[in-house]
Image (tube, rainbow, N blue to C red; front, top):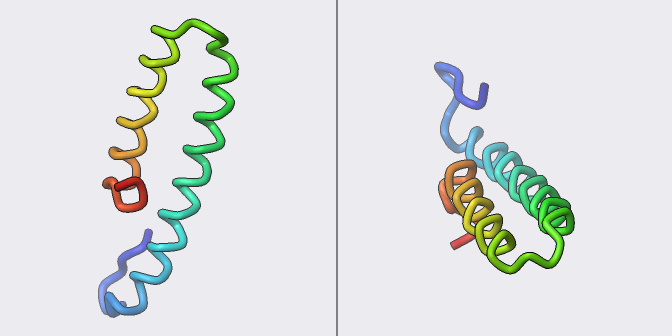
Length: 66
């Protein structure tokens, strides 16, 4: 848990930044693997791209992908 009563926000934000960057890296790595599995199907590749963008926004609040 990132927030605890009595812990100043200034102490939480640096940790939160590290966690979000790690999430972004995991999403990017997973997306790369998923795209490779899709193959050459253009429509499926587009759908996977849209799905991945949705995951990025939902997981990170679009902090690092905007």
